[in-house]
Length: 114
Image 1: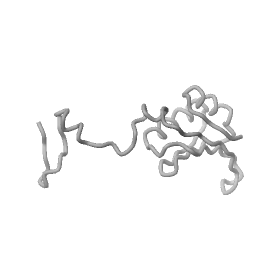
Image 2: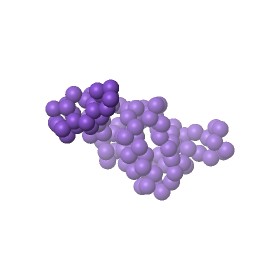
Image 3: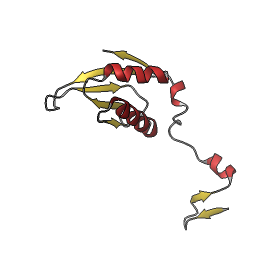
Image 4: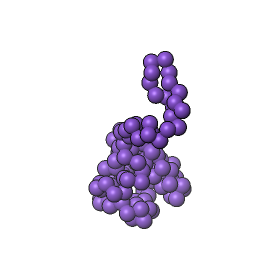
């Protein structure tokens, strides 16, 4: 059963064949660890009120993947942080390099830097 809007655009379908036609613009989070990317660590202090921030570049530009990874890192480190899916960047408050490296290592994500 399909429900269509006035312009005949597919809005909802319970038919599996219809769902196969829909293309995903980004790979699923399960596919991302198999992709080749390297997380690059750096510490930044400029323009942050004198506070240190751990910045990790080089992640895939996938909103769901970055959001879940950022949430996990923040909860395990007990700090705040943010992600930018347009740039593929995570920012974690404080010098959390060692904790974040252990988390990435456990997920099989390669990293380099400080």
